[in-house]
Length: 53
Image (cartoon, rainbow, N blue to C red; front, side, top):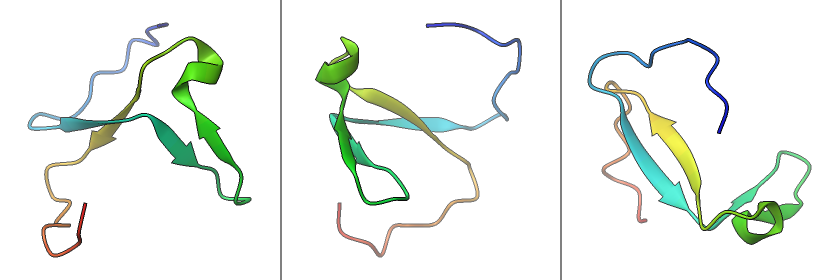
């Protein structure tokens, strides 16, 4: 993993997903990139508690 020097805001949490869907609708899997999961930052103010996981 490369580090670009930017620090995430305080209180940032992360979720891990084995696959993600790109904006064009294609689904990519972490295994295609030699990873077990994608690390996705979630900002502290993001309120998605009402959505099902």
